[in-house]
Length: 491
Image (cartoon, rainbow, N blue to C red):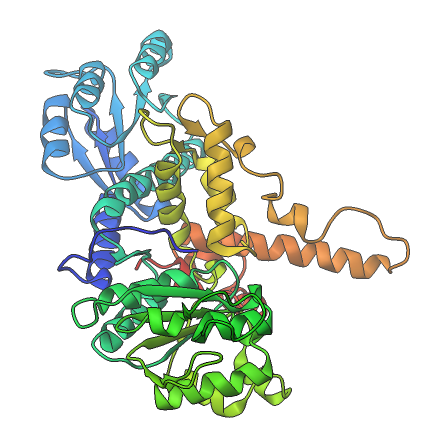
């Protein structure tokens, strides 16, 4: 399901807002190097710029660094502790006092380890002794950049939940969902029948409600849902069309059907594929003529109702199998919405997880913070149960979390790393060793590629550089595992 958010969409389009966010986060991936020694400044700048491919700005002392931090965002500050005017310790105190969102790494001589430890107590991320090992320096900065980027994204997501990336009652920053939002806008002022297809838990009813809410200016009737799979054929007919008193055993009085109740509004037929064939004939007639009679009655009732049907099975395949009427299929399939599963919307996982962490936080307490390790677990899971499963996982995490932070151990046990689920290490002597080794290798290889692409934001060339393979080899493997690199690029 898609989380309900009451507010209407704001003036900026989700596409524009996603682009602005990606630009802002990319602009913030800058390093500020604060060092009074010119040779050290220049060597650090060249090393980090070439090794990590990020912009490195320079400051000669803490005063200049603070002015630069107030002027534009930075991801990392690497600062010496002993400097004129404003030293590194005072700079860290200013950063903490002003709550500037930046990660601080300090550099110090061998004789000042005590000062470095004190700096970490003030909030520094880590420290390096001079002269630092180049490889260790790059690894430390790379790790700090990765964690800072994730923290910045989570911070941005919290503000977006209250302001952006929502369309009526749907939260998303996925381009495929934006196409659906635009389609909803096109059908809002019509009575066109809509068919929504998608896996269980993807939010079909919430999309139907979004269509209904977007149409409220033109149609002020109610939203009336009917779960077709939950009702036997005898009750489904009465539920849809109503009945007259005495029309069958137990009909003690007249009852209006859902079509009649929904007049002027929307009738949502959930799991429409489960409607029995005899009922499909009657439903087709109502959709064509917009009129019907109650069971046991002879008075024709005309209705003005938009019908939205939903199913987690492909109706076209059921038509070929003879399990669903072709004429009814075409009547329902005037406008079709294919709702993508959550695994094809990876950019929505942090957004939705953050929303659910806020939703299920304890009353009177701040929203739970999702740790980097827990978020990594959420991002690498396939989510067969889609958004409904994610919501349940976050509700459980909020119940078991302590000290305001959600850790991996707070998540359900079935959210295991990919290699723990696919390509198990259990030995099956009934199968050849080569087959099992191939599965293990493929599972690890796919997980490695996805993690590398996430780090490189979908850039194949950088992924190849990290892996040590050629760009051609990486491209072939991406195609083999059917990985959509666009899903990892900033939107």
